[in-house]
Length: 178
Image: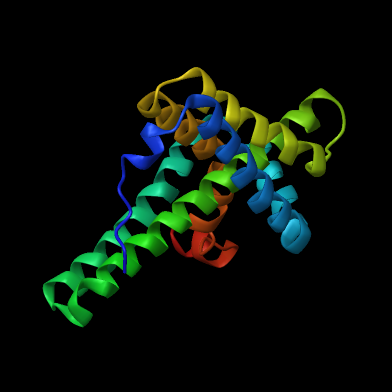
């Protein structure tokens, strides 16, 4: 298995990084809309219900994915399973999950902007989200782009993360806590 050099992304020109980001968000966002449009609407509504906490829960979502991925990679590494191939696979799966979360976050932010400005249009939202991601890669350095992309996407996934984290809180569990 060939190893991917992390510096490849930073060696690309800013416009090319913006184009790659635009295409990734567009493809992943369109796939999510095609398969689970209702989830995008639920996530957008969840942000509207509690926008002040969205970024905190979004960061928590990233931390959960990171911890699970790191746990898997270190477990495979500790046991020397399959000569390191499973370690690289765990890292790759974690990276894909982070990319997917980020694209979903941009989709939700774009959809939220269409909802605030006019009427909710998720298909326009995916274009707006992809454009936001591209602009961050064109305007900022690689580190600044990653930071701004994660902040915007964390806000976008924050509503869904909040709902997921608190999904076990039912009326019965709240009444039993008295």
